[in-house]
Length: 615
Image 1 (cartoon, rainbow, N blue to C red):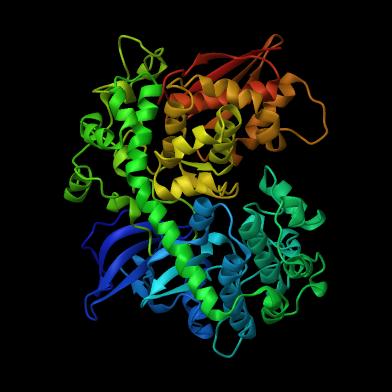
Image 2: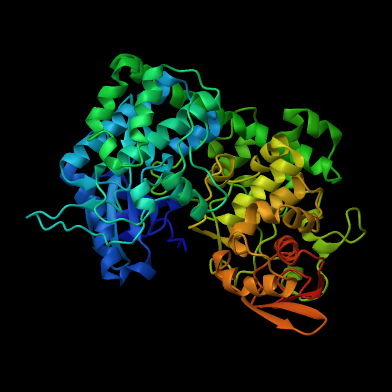
């Protein structure tokens, strides 16, 4: 859970916090100023729930030890580390730019010259790490950053937090165990996916092959609906060729990828330097690489800047399509749209002076252009760092009731919900303050939601949904980067679902029921059903008890059977919105292969939820 320390707070009597940049699996990252030296840094704080864990604290500091042991220009510099009253911290150089995941979400894929301009310096950093006995083990686009430093655009490798470091007299110990899997499933090597011990630098080479393939094709070579299925493909399936993805490049690149993707690590490149040598015939000169990187970063940032007015245009169009009372001119003319936004957003909380001035001109919105200087994991962790269009008000009084929800009313009803009030503004339904930050959802669910929208309504409609989201949440959805092994803040996932309800489902939360039911076997079947085993309705529903925790960290499921019906009861489901409840009804219907009937908890934030199925 991301914590939010106030701006101005002081860490270790020397770092003054300026703003929260984001959160990762173990820590939160702030932009901060060293009051003594006057230097701006990225300050990473280990989350309080982990601070008492000796092993996790050791891994946290491993990042600093690894980076300082390697000392390479393409590895983020860790300046300081220590303990404070708020727990362990790391101070890192503050980078301005964007990570490779955001680049892919914006560019879709790169030409060979630009892809190699990213990969070559990353391999150079890995070669230096491997020569020091350090294996990264979590290579992925989120951990590769393109930064502008002193007028030069440079690639930086981030996050050695789960690195494997060989024991030396320096006291840095290897932190690994047989059977323990580290890393992101899509980028694992076969030996990592199999939980083997003795992972070495050749695992990083396999992962870099995956990154290179994705840069060239826009797709990951071993994609599958679940983490388990992905790991299975990594171990057993042959990697697709570039030609199969309709990418026409030098045969040198395909030959290098074939070696990097060898299932037997003994057949891969023995070192990252050898991988570089294999790519050399297709690699542009250093000057050309610098030029390609500079052009790439400029394109991405310019596109981010242009999204400011475009996002406002998308809101007006979405509101109009959902039959909200928005002037037709506002949906057609960007200037009129921007002029109408303040009235649309009335009641959503005060705007900053920067936001107010941006809405009065045709200039790109600066708060949309700013990117996080450092992203430690790339996973969406800050549910509160929302764009202007998603500023949440205090909870509406009706959101905490257990009676019929205003959300459930049909479009055009005379009694609109909070989402449909006041000049048609869109307000993502907030969690009650007592529930915020306490509940999480596995990445399986938001990943499925994005896929359902694209399948049912097309990529254009999904793009309109993503225009309403915070940049990092939109990037995860756009690049299909939601990780089935990672917990995401419920309020962030809810923002995605509500934006899709508005734009794709015309404001109808009940539409999720059919989407979840019709897509069950494709997206949820592998986790809810035993493979290849025929089971009856009641036996299928009993599976909901054992797999519930693969989706949610809240709610307790019980299944009550009688000769004629089966009741699925979820206690402690009070954090779930109406849209999420419809998703779960559809999921249970897909599991049972029959229609169900909601008998309790049909309103948002009702504590208990019950669905009855005939047998």
